[in-house]
Image (tube, rainbow over all chains, first blue to last red; front, top):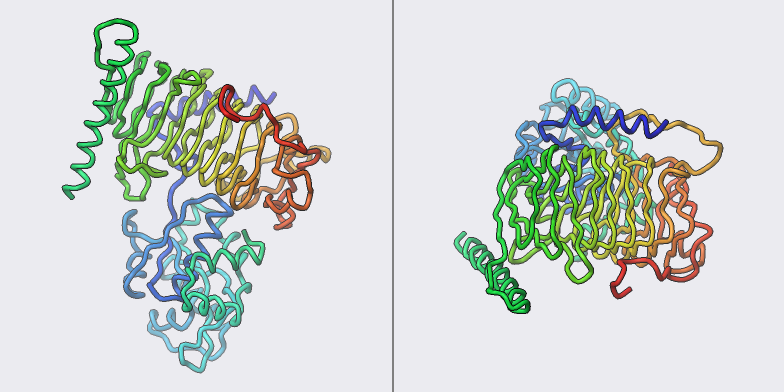
Length: 201
Length: 320
């Protein structure tokens, strides 16, 4: 029975691939995460790289940019060489990017940027990591991974994987990671330790 | 800019010289006039008729063995891939893609080698030897794969891979749906020794030495579908029973995990009869990423396991 199905599959694939095209699904491609050269941004990017790579085998690389505007340019790009697929963003910066006033309630603010980003930019906000980013402001800001809608077509499982980190990094944990990196440890090693300890990898 | 080019030229000349010297020595041993070993440079092309390679083959681009053709490679042949990166993803794009058939049978003291042509070779310098939707029985024996993204990939094809060495690749061997026998090989110093996406078969992985890789064996579904098409229940048996057999291998001392189940690998995997570096359950479990670490995953059934190294594992005739 199975051999019969196998033969049929082979025959079908023979027809499909006579021009020697090879499915990228079989041989892999690369996901790019956009980050700036700040300790916070680098740390979160390394966390995502390691988590995605270890759990799916997908090749993931970080592209570094000078500032947030450059990241957004890449996030909107359709060119393979310049695009990024995933970034980490916080709601305060997102509201600033949208030219809107901050909302007093963090949950409402998150839902607001999530809605607008999806409608206007084709970008999905996944669930927040858990830590807050005050940035000297009174209203707490939350951070979350953002993924392009078109990337989900090729990587439908990415939300499932990234959501594992939802609520997993509280303020104290995040500060602890940043402190280690500031003291000289490599962000990659700190990310690995966190993911291992949490049994994420 | 000039320095890398110069290095390439010098390295190419060295390859030619090595081929000539080797050939002259062999001819001298037999009392014949020396004749140069073949040195063939291949760029993007489809080979449409039966072909035999020997000597040194330099590949720069994608060389396809067409559906009507079989490539036969003589013992001792060196296939070298130049690093070109057309899509700028950091992985070399040169590859050998077999849609027809391949017979690459070296011998213990004259293996067939697939490796980087770069003067300072590194993993990912070239893509892979890819056997893809081939309708023939492909045979690889006493081959060596180095510096590839994957040394060898077998997808929707039938192949026998024996007595071969996979080292310093991103992945040694990757396969998806395949009819495959992988026996008496050595996987060492790869990021991933063996990676596969399906639990169907028939696939036999037996008497291999899998050690010193970052991850020894990585089973991860391709992630193409949100929904699964596996049958949900097989009467409590591990899903691979009777389809994918992985037994009598030495799987030990891999750096991160000896075995890792990737995301969404929900089914139990029978891996009994292997040697894991110890016979103590807790120590073995610490080297396996499965339900013990992530309850959404399947469980690896490693008992009963071998208490000592399996002496038959690894290439025949090699120092085990």
